[in-house]
Amino acid sequence: MVDMTHYRLIVADSADDLARQAAERMACCIDQALSERDRAQIALAGGSTPRSAYARLGAEHLPWDRVDVLLGDERCVPPDDPASNARMLAETLLAQPPARAARFHPVPVDSLSPLEAAEAYEAMIATLCPGSPPCFDLVLLGLGDDGHTASLFPGRASLHVTDRWVCLGEGKGLARISLTAPVLSAARQVLFMVSGQEKAQALARLLNDQESSDRTPARLVQPASEVIILADAAASAGLH
Image (cartoon, rainbow, N blue to C red; front, side, top):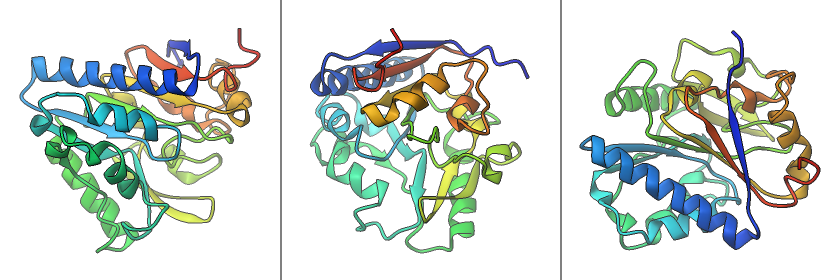
């Protein structure tokens, strides 16, 4: 397949500006989706970069009771573990009174084996989201310093899963559950948030159309629409 993905890089002035722009764009996507359909489905990233953006987004007065919030990936840890993406959302987005009305669908890692949790999560997504692959209104992704996104890590078998919507993976010593590349690519809008000097090389590789997706799995995300990358000055150093 020829990669025709178009990226638009937007460099934020500060960490605060990065969070503000990300929150505004996510709110706009949700608003647009709800103007066209009864419900909106969004898949969000974990990690530290989007925390402030989620807190801002959660304060937006949107029809949150019509929004399904899911995760792009989850670590196989208890929901109260500091490494849990569900816990991070509970402390940020879902801690705000407006967004508390959203319907959150965590990956059921607390009660099932990783394989069972992946299968249950896949079944839930297929029910919630129309299409094959299922189509999210918004997918927010991060970018690891090794080029991974969601829990699609370099050199792993999960990169080549095209017949499932959810897969098992492993990264940085933890078992993980992740949306697959076909689902991430089916989203109506894909937004990356990238911050920190340690991400500069990975971001340059993401934007290089000669780069291998085996080495930089983020390049597997190839939606029909433009991919927006919000980055801080440190991550985008040397690109412009």
